[in-house]
Amino acid sequence: MAISWNKNLETGIQIVDSQHKALVDKLNQFFEACMQKKGKDELMSMIRFLENYVVFHFKTEEDIMQRHKFSGYTLHKTMHDEFIKEFLKIKDRFEKEGATLELVNSTTKFLTNWLIEHISKIDKQLSGLK
Ligand SMILES: [Fe+2]
Image 1 (spheres, protein in one colour):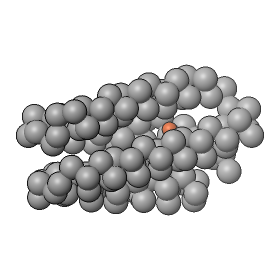
Image 2: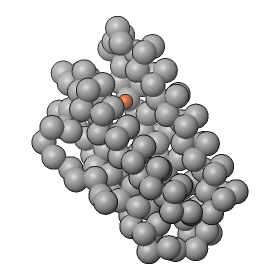
Image 3: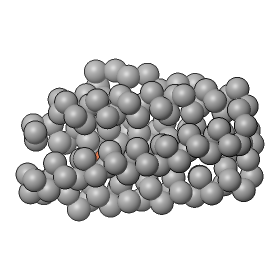
């Protein structure tokens, strides 16, 4: 299972779109590594990379919203914060349980659904901000 990039995910803000594409690539690499049953060290280092990248990317979006005094800022930031909380729980489970089939499946589903839903409905609201 992989996330495929499509035009519906574009916000029109170049930096946001290029970070989203990079994030999708990194997530797909992580899903692939899970499927190939890569070792814990490799998976954990990918998870840590994703965590850092997500934090960095959310900050980029939040800075743009703040610069434009965007009215949806607080709600959007809350969604980012909630996601990071969920992501940290997933990271913790991988650390403790290892990449069990159940964990890999639920994680893949959650990350894919959240990202597509968030980009196509929430990030799209940023279209027009530069
Ligand atoms: Fe966002």
